[in-house]
Length: 79
Image (cartoon, rainbow, N blue to C red):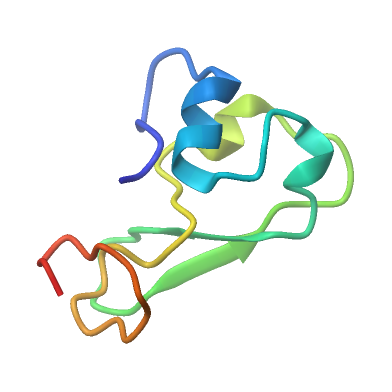
């Protein structure tokens, strides 16, 4: 499950998706995944400086859009 792509984003929602806690500093430098509409995994890293809550929009802590993911994750395709 990813953070919703729009609307208000609360840290409780972000924490339920990522599980790193409710302090912004817990997310610095951590990887995130998102769908860019291609068949390839899209990812990035949260910056080391201040960043807005909107940066969490549509992001997840695992590549749930890649149906070939080999991790222990809940991919959208059920793998």
